[in-house]
Image (spheres, one colour):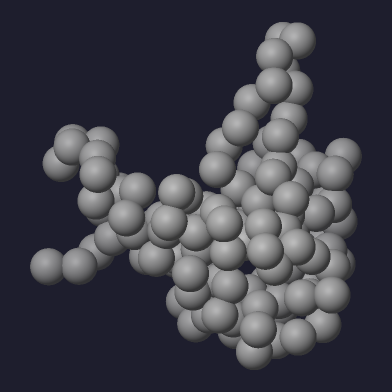
Length: 124
């Protein structure tokens, strides 16, 4: 299901708590980027998910997040994104903290890549 322009505006507003965030439509959903790094997404199913890794998964689970898993070609795919609890969407300050953590997770993931794989962020 492709998201409506109204829903994309909602996602942009939601992620405006983290300045410099942009939303781009992709694969029926929308990716949330900052400094060229994707750290969040609005899934085609309508959920809001944030990037997580071994350093942040436990805290996200404790906060009520659930893993985003999708099926393709009969196989489950895990991409390291976790649905945030719906109650968080009504708490801008708490959501900002989660979004900042997800962005730092995206930075760590990018830092692990080879220089050729790294996303250019425009920084010197």
